[in-house]
Picture 1 (spheres, rainbow, N blue to C red):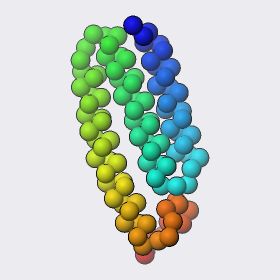
Picture 2 (cartoon, one colour):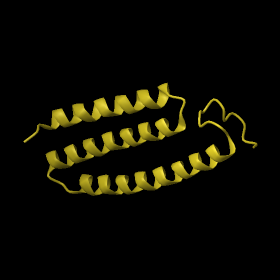
Picture 3 (tube, helix red, strand yellow):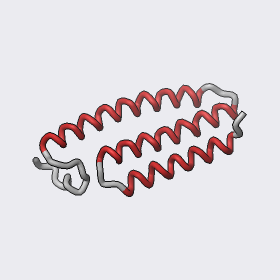
Length: 100
């Protein structure tokens, strides 16, 4: 079986990639993808701790996080589509005003 330390290392690397992608990009779609990567890193760590402690609660919480992430992605992409219809780009720098 895979050791828990390897799973936590993978989780840390995934979270770092997601954080770098979120802070380094200006495209809203890529920022949403980076947030999803960070949420999956949390799911990996929850599953690893759940396996180590022989408790199913971590895996159940990970399933709820997946459901919330799907809803967040749907709402976020809906907002991006609404913004892209009114403005030419989806860069964060172009969206400094709340007025349309």
